[in-house]
Length: 178
Length: 175
Image (cartoon, rainbow over all chains, first blue to last red; front, side):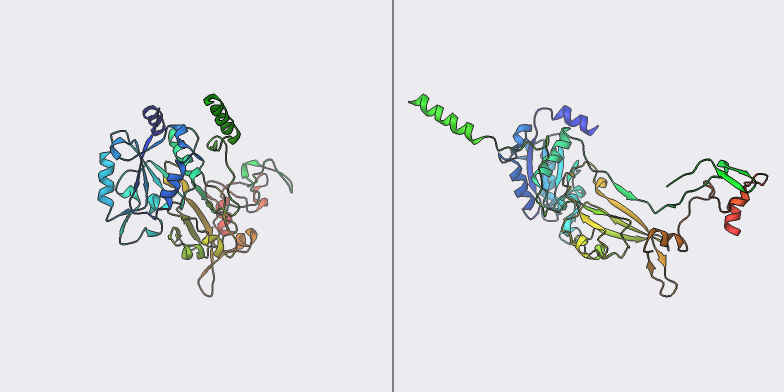
């Protein structure tokens, strides 16, 4: 649903607003690197704007700090209605190494709703482009949750319904191998 | 004169070629020592929680849900990809892959969850893990299959023709 909305609403171009709420400037450098001719996101119509009132997308870097949280929220409220928020970097996604600090609220999603996450410390410029391309529907996302259950028996099991015995010889018709 | 200079300029431009990466269409190689998403190997992992203790962002969590099962949970959301977990792991169960295309719309996609079977030492009471799969099979408390639904034949002689093939759960538990 979100993807369809993206393709409908942002069919032409994404104007991004670059909001740093207390990061270390690592992600800022990578985001500005994305806008250089080497990566050239203007191919996709992405343009950096200076005011949240002009923007469709907010790129958040850094955790939501107590000192800048209110300003971040005001910038989010100032954006016109069909808006997306990208959390770029580990701090914006989950708080980073400051997740339990007294000076931060935590990830930016504690204050404003986040639509897309680009983890990394800092994420590569390619990773940021990938995240934007996922949002714009250019590529499919490649991540999925991984879960390893506990070991099952690695020996063949025999089901009673599949056993046919004659005398001392037992024939197993079917065998499950795990 | 001006046409000549324009031609010269065009020649310079053509010679320079194109620098822009065709990125989302074609993947670019990463540097050799690049650290991407860590990948956990549940077979090699012994559940020592060294990675959890060394993680600077405290994002590898270890739960002991019962006596025998330890759950190691990697959240993925605040990982700084420092590689300390891979460095400290005594069994080399964590490898830093080169995956960086992790952009997603649900943060839970980045998580990894490992269920580890740990047996309890009769002397010290601490958990330990079998050295191999067969060793851990022999340990007391290794989780069986669901016996009520999926019946595992314990004695082949019980299922010869003429004998009832029922109550094999009882046979397994008692006999």
